[in-house]
Each structure stands twice: as C-alpha cells, then as structure tokens.
Picture 1: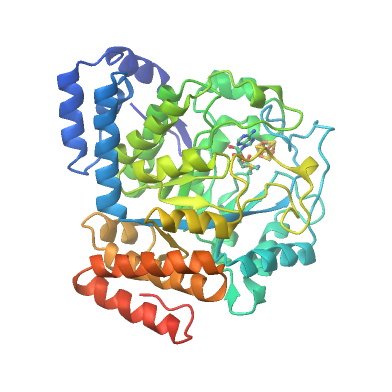
Picture 2: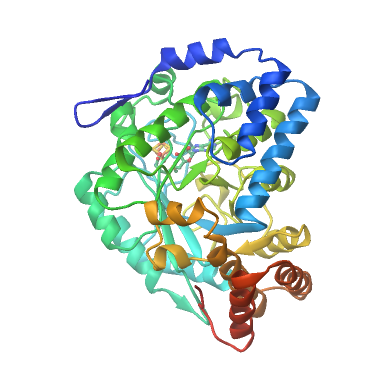
Length: 466
Ligand code: SAM
Ligand code: SF4
C-alpha cells in the first residue's frame, strides 16, 4: 500500500513489493495468458498482474507478451514516434551520484557551463538539423546566477530562430525544485518536467547517492507532487536500470504512478527507461550491480506498455540502434536522436565532458531515414501543449482514442516539414513514400486533416497543427 505521511512524504512500500514478487515468482502459463488477455483490453494492469508478466521465462509466453505489447502500442499510438534532442547546458554538480560523470568529486571530467550565447549556438545547430523539441538537462549547481540561469536558458532557447525553424517545446530535466521555483518554470512555458528517482529502493538509493541534496530520497520522490501543485501537469518519471532489481523498480514505479493518480487524478505523461551506461570516473556505471539483459530490457518496455498503456515511454540514445528499433514496436513512443550529453557538444564534440557513453551515434537524418524506412512516422509535433491539451485534458482525449485525430495529422505535417526543410535526398524519398502510405491508411477526420495539413506544408506554410 502506498501511503502519504503528512503533506509530502510518499512511502514506497518495499515489503509489499517483495511479497508481491515472491507470490508470483513462478506464475503458471494459464495465469499469464489470462493477464495478457486483460492487458489486450488496454485498461492497464494491477501490481499483481504486472508481477505475473515479469515472471515470464518461457519463450512462447515471452512471444505472447511481445505480441500483445505490439498490438497495444500500434492500436494506441499507431506508427508515430516523437523525436527530441537533449540540450545539456552545464555539467557542474554538487551531488555525488556514484554512476554519473558529472558528480562533484570526479576530477576526470572537464567542467563546462554554457553562456547564454553558447546555449543559443547549440540551439541553432539543433534547429538547423530539424529539431523542434529539446530536453534541457543540467547538473545540480548553477553557481553564478542560481536557478535563474535555467530560466534564462529557456528564454534563450525559445528566442533562437534559424531559417524556417525554431524550438517549439522545451522539456526540462533538472534537479527537484520548490513549488515556487516550479511556478517560475511553468511561467516559462515548458512542456514536461522530468526527473528520475534512479532507484526506488531506499538502501540502494543511500548507497549510490553519497553527498549533496540528492541524498534526500523524499525530497526527490515528492518533486512531482510539487511540480503538479505549481501547475505543471505533464510530468515524467523514470528509473535508472542496473542499480537494483528491475522487477522491484517496476512495482515501485507503479506505486509512484498510483500515488499521483490518486492525489491529482492523473499520472505521469511519460516514463523513461535509462539503463546504466559507462561514464568517466564511475566504476558502478561500467559494472552495474543489477545488470539488465537485453531480453529483460525488452520485457520492461513491453510490460510498461501493458501496465500503463496511455503513458508515453521514452527511449534515449543510451541504447544501440538495434535495441531502439526493437523497442519501438514494443511500446516506445518518444526517442531522442543525434544526441550529445556534454554541454556544447553539438558545436564541439568534446567527449571528456560527457555524462555517459552513447549507444546510438547516428545523426538525426540517419535516425529519421531508418525510422521512416521501417514504416514509422517521426513526429516533431508540439501541438498538444501549445493548445493546452495537457494533464487530465490529454488523458481524457487519449483514453477513448480521440487523440489520434490530432496526433496522426500533426505527426504527418511536422514530418513533411522536416522533409521539405532539412532531409537528405534519400530520407526525403523514403519519407514521402511513408507519408503517402500513412495517409492512404487513414480514414475519416484524421485523413481529412492529415491531407489538409500536409498540403499546407507543401505549399510553404509552417507550424500548422490541429
Ligand atoms: N542532475 C539532475 C538529476 O540528477 O536529476 C538532472 C540531470 S541528470 C544529468 C539526468 C539523468 O541522467 C539522471 O537522472 C540519471 O538517471 C541519468 N544518468 C546519470 N548517469 C548515467 C549513466 N552512467 N548511464 C545512464 N544514465 C545516467
Ligand atoms: Fe549531478 Fe544529476 Fe549526475 Fe547526480 S545524476 S551527479 S545530480 S548531474
């Protein structure tokens, strides 16, 4: 049971999680099939049911899990994949997270804090590649200006234009804030505020967070409550897989989600699934205490897709191109592309200031080619948050399937924009074919809107959405 103590502290009930896992350590095939049948109804799963799916080892049942996840993904999200790039502005940090190259005492890392001009330069490069969404990332230390530095960075990114493009949505991944700071973030018109608990397991959390404010488990786990109280209703949560048993983490993540649903009527907009990657000056990052195999990683994505069908799943370039391809089908709805994890990395790729190593080094255009060639529609859409379709309003449209009448046309029109303004000739050819096929498969209102918006873009209009 999840409890709220006083106004703030959320208790992740570890005993309950361990008992649930023990009860379903070896679920029988009939029970697994029953849970998969329920999952196919797309109403989500309870912890007991999720635990049943996590116990699958049999190849046939695993196949059944993946097939069900594929169907749910396709039904809810169609072929769209939302594209974004991280924008690291500073790698100074007061914390000592043993897995991260930015940790305070890491002397092997070259420190860098971008000036506003530097942030504008990075933004321009991303805009000129065709990006429309960025995730602003920083360590937890802004020595010169304090939190105002982040607010100014947001203003700089939104103000930077180049040719026909600009960044239309900034999501933010910075250390937990006070309600007042979250209010100021909200005023800057951010999209999603995102932060990962890293591990929900208290002892492990203490072991890997040695110093700084991040040692405070409760301050971090309550960040989303404060963000939502401040009016930010799209929040993103996640786990850093490899620190502790992934099965425990999934059930704890579910407790966090249920807490938000119970308290605010709506859960997180996205869940991220980073796996530990090698990082300079970090032993634990190279030798994760609980390594997650590729098969288990695919299980994680598929199980999350079935457990919280309407919550976006984000896959970063930590993973290889092959793993990313496989997980798109199983449930991933957003991907980063062409990423650098060092401040200033788009202008000057200095590896010695990176947060961790990447698994996918391809450029945005190469990723787009690959995605489109596999029949997916790379979407640069930012329509929902600009039209106020966030939080509960978004879920009210998503659950009956009505959001597709917006997402499909907007995905196609923003992809067409990319093809017109930024694509290589090869990507443009593949992309045009993919758009034509997608339009042919649409019917009714989405088709009408899709054709109209794509034609408007072909005629030279930009930033058209519904
Ligand atoms: N400093 C803030 C924080 O810790 O929440 C926000 C930015 S931090 C740079 C973003 C995320 O990177 C962390 O939440 C963590 O999950 C992830 N990360 C850190 N080290 C990593 C590693 N070695 N491999 C993969 N992800 C890592
Ligand atoms: Fe700092 Fe975040 Fe890295 Fe921890 S994960 S050392 S808080 S940047």
